[in-house]
Image (cartoon, rainbow, N blue to C red; front, side):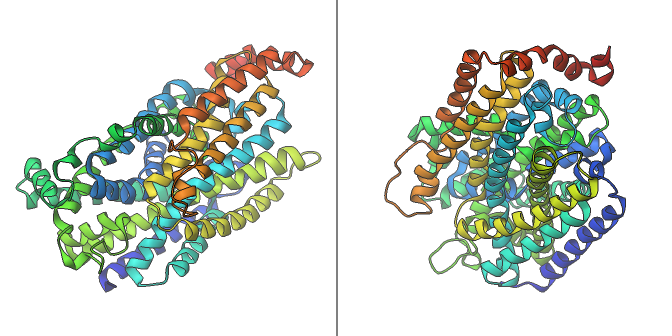
Length: 518
């Protein structure tokens, strides 16, 4: 399956992104540059970068693979990603930009006790980042394995090394510009593939669906929401995870600190929504196109009748089928660069949790030196890179869009409740936030391990102990309820201080530092 044209384009794209990293490294002079690109990114640019974070392996490879295998059910994931953005823009974007500096934890610490909040938030961020990293690492590993014929383990190591280089040397400047470049290329590539697919069916979407139905074993059932009717609790839980998890993903929240003001933060989400909705509409054409054109073509099938490289590679094979080796190389290169960019953003979010939230604000005695903080972040980057490779190897058979949903399930049960309550409820206390967030985090982790994703698909047991997948419908209300109950029962001196700073936080959150000072 190795393709010289595809490999040449692939290597060229990787070299271009490394060139962007080298350029960014020269502009990264301080912690502000490293974590937040110096706040110099415009709303339009940041919107492209945010859309780039979502147009990732989970979106492109995973969603097209889900549509290829399950049809309409893939739409649930696409809709879930985009419906989370209004929550971000109306409830969080402006407050985040006005209250925070580098991470969402800065917002929580504005009125809550810094040390316990930062310790919890760092732990929650690292867990969410780990789950999200799995999706990207699996997609990248399978892509390199398919293109170069390498063993999967070696493919994972290559991804890990490139990811570490991006973050260590370029920081947020490199991560943002790689995201912007690849978002433009991905939108272009997706448009071309969708156009070529529709051209094969005379631009008749009905004919495309008819062909897809005729080659799928379930027939017309793929045009209906099977998952919702088969397991409605899990379907509702998945919708909650995708909608509210978006507002708790650390690498997405970090992007609101890269723009100069709150207005630019709101503009960012508008443009992100525009590009994401457009791209996800293309994914349906790509997914059904792959089903119609590849399902019965022995060129793209292995000895068992499945797609070579697995279901996650449906879009990659489709690019070859409709556009030849040049399109295969282009899409593969852009897909890989988008995975690297998302992984770099995730790694930066995790590294900042270690260096900024833990080292600089908790463990460091006295003011933290900028150079030492950045050095700790780079050390953490190497550690996260190693963990990412190991997780990618352990979960190599999972659908990548599905793994993203698990990251969202953990985020909306841990970081999202704390952010929302901290900003909008005067009664939240430090004790309530830490205990409630911990209950949400550990229950989401425990029920995920006891549920189908780990208990059955990784550990190999016949049936899960906890059947709802993901567990959001249980864990998110549990986190909110615990935060409320513990805060209401908390009458400590610290609780009084937490409540007393709410008005000052609200003033700054709405109007910025100038209004708060007045």
